[in-house]
Image 1: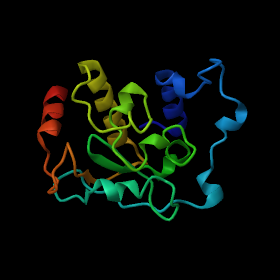
Image 2: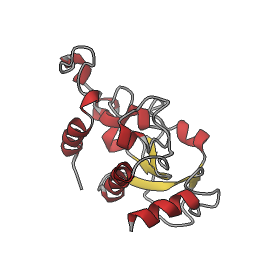
Image 3: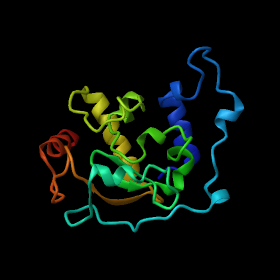
Image 4: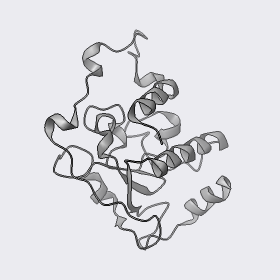
Length: 179
């Protein structure tokens, strides 16, 4: 598993555009790098880790959106390829003001390859990406699956999993490509 500093270093290498001023190509001014410390405001609530199998909680997009970090009384959640994770320990990355806040409260799988965390780019669909880009998203999914502190908490009903938590064709195709 990776600690938060390793994640930040990887992100700086992978997505440098999020760590510099796009107009001047200079590093961001120091105030932009100051991220909130969760302990200073109290810990976010956490959900219990679930087993990644049918029977895990099924989230709807509207429910997940409530967990984008804007309400500190709710757990901070993201989804990748339809798998939902509690990422509260990474609040400085995913919380309001963090570089990956565009992933919070939704499935932003595509952005994990493209680096586009805008509303238009932070979407679940990856079917039209090339094989290397899809492999990159799958690598990020492995990161969340293997992370010691981030917790799998269910499946997102949508293009990857049905309302019963069963994998849909898009998920089955990704798994087949991953083998």
